[in-house]
Amino acid sequence: MPIATKLHQFFKEKKLLHQSLHHSKSDHLGHAIELANASPEVSAKCIPLIDKSGPAVAVISFLADLDLDIINQTFNRHFQFLNDATAGKLFNDCESGAIPIFAMAYGLPVIVDEDLLNHDHVFSASGCSSTLLRVPGSAFRVAMTGAIKGKISKWPQVSQISIGDALCASSGNMSIDVVAKKLQKLYQLPPMPETAIRIMHLVADPESDVNQLSKLIERDPSLSAQIMRYANSALFNYRGSLNSIKDAVNKVLGFDRVSQLAMGIAASKAFHIPDSGPFGIDAFWTHALYAGVFAQGLALMANPDLAIDENEAYMAGLLHNFGILLIGHLFPPEFKMLNKLRESDADASMFEIEQQVFGMGGAQEFISLGHGTIGAILLKMWGMKDSAVKAAAMHHNFHYQGESEHYVCLVQLANYYLSQYGIGDECCNVDPEVLLGKLGIDGERASVLVETSIAQCQSLDGLICEMTA
Image (cartoon, rainbow, N blue to C red):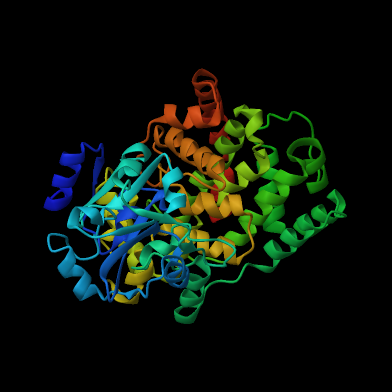
């Protein structure tokens, strides 16, 4: 069924606009949000309650927790949470894990968190495990006309509230820190390599200079050679002589780009994955280096009022697919299967092929998060900037709105353009005009940048071979 019968009738009677987003069968609301590429920040969940006066429903943000004490104190009630079995009987035409927020369709009183009433649109379960609803804010407010309104939710006190990581938890409240700790208990997550840590600390020190960065990079002959080759590439078209890392920094790349590229290259040494295949290290670095260049170039064209940092944009592009490396490192059999599935079906989405490896050994729970969330967990643990963490988590979520969304858009736009040249982990089915509009970028100028950059980036192929040797 595309939508629960009673809910369909409710929308019909109230003449409420809504959009049905069809997706593969989900296990719970968080899973449905990920399958539908919806935004967790503007999604709502239904929490069934009961006291001596009967059942009711609280409607709050997907990412928040219900403050039961506040509800009871404010409305002089004695609510308790209703168990799933009993709640299922109240929504008898709904599938498990897909209870909609429009409980008035089932004759139940509703208490809605007033913060939800300010959204331009709201995502909700539909009663069907393979359909998510996108309801315009105006229609949502009409539907909630008879509901009790108040401040009834609280937010988990963590540094990053659910950036896609929450999507594996049926309650939708699992923070990135919780998932990271669980991963660490079950698997030996690779620590950031010493060179990458030293570079990160150096960059964080306001007193650091080019001499210190150059000496640090020169300790690693392989890293030095890669930085020099990058500086000498056609991407920068420098016609002079570069004799040292210091020259590369001062004359071509600049402190920020050298430190970021060096950190990315050094950090990637933490992983051991095959060279070949659609997700092998060769393909990874081609995508990563090109995406960094594209994201930075597009950032320079963006509306200045957005205050986008071009260096953060480069880093976001460079690191956004690190989850692929972590999957390959932790789960070799699943990684091998991902490669085979991609080779056999080039048109399938990344999410679709990730879902097909469910159930393979102990990786099931974490593979289900998707490479974006897994990568974001690692980048956050390593102390990377929030813009890079968010870009990793959300680069396949084209409805995303929230913190660092412009960096997410830059990476998505870079991936779109790269997909036109067969570079990246999948075809990017997104309207580039929407992303260009969000960023305030002129489409014709972007096209010229892309044509120029793709030709220049091809000079990096030798560097990529050197990096993966």
